[in-house]
Length: 483
Image (cartoon, rainbow, N blue to C red):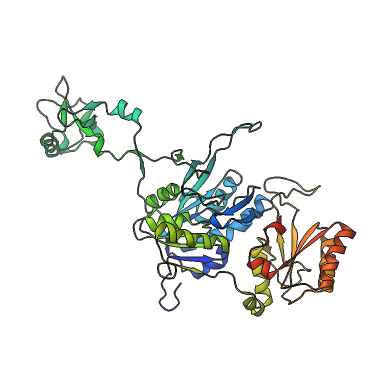
């Protein structure tokens, strides 16, 4: 937001956690929100980023559905705050947690503001799916913020079979295909202007004409009345004048991004531009402001730009933000710094040395994909936790979809030029106390004694301490170490 003018800065990509970025936006300023956040799906990805061939691993780091919902709830509260009363909110998810997500969104937006659960067929059935039906769909949950939301009904083209069965007649001369419709209505709708005789014909006793005499005369002049053997008129409807079939909640006509797709970037969860085009056309108008708070490779931003909407994107990944910028330059012909800006990319080492310790800890934990401790004092040597995708319930605990998993890795952060042997010794005590098999330590660098002790601790206990430097995080060289 522009602090001097009070206006929202659009055509802007913010690099960072949307929970920190969204409070910058004023209340009720966004017309349409679409998010495609990480699913609680226990899937690992390896990403090859376009021409640079940068290999970057990432995973959904939520130990359970409860952890995932706990992560998303405050972010969705902020998203609801910035949505206009006329706005719409789309939450893109899959089967793993969609039912829990809906309960959460019902609480935030209100049950009566839920409009649709859209099923998008994103893949075809694969062989050997085990003892269950093949899962081929994603879900999109649509909420609005009042009874006066923006809506432009999307239509699908008629199939050839439908045209043949419903528009089988062709007009002589023009060859235009048409069908006919009854011109009568229920007597309950009758008004004085609809009770009359038309060319000697009256509707049956329980019916009246659906249009006034003046309107019927207009249809007659247009050549749109067709008469049957009994002289009863019907209204001619041309195929060319029909918008198509109203789009329903099952979308099978938009193919996913595959290895041959022209728009493919190599981003594992990339969505097709046609999917975002449909959403943006249906739920916004030209000039409206679109927000994607987990925008990944920027498909929503490209679609918004192409459709004449304003936009804001947020993503925690610096790599994704750079991919978005490149895509906007290449696909939309935009000039970075003139037509759009990327803000809050990672700081330099020099800047990170100067910020307050707790802010530095927060930056490091988020950069690793972890969750920051809620308390900033008395944390017993744990600044954050990473929940790996393969987490399983600890023995003795009740395991269920909402059962909190016990597999997690501690993160310790030291804003030091060189972490020493005493720092490693203290972290070893934390890992032993918490019975952790793996932990992550972040510092600017490490002394020789510290690195020697990391190795010795593994040989003594079989427990792994992963030492990470700020430079490795800034340059995104951490994927292999996080595995």
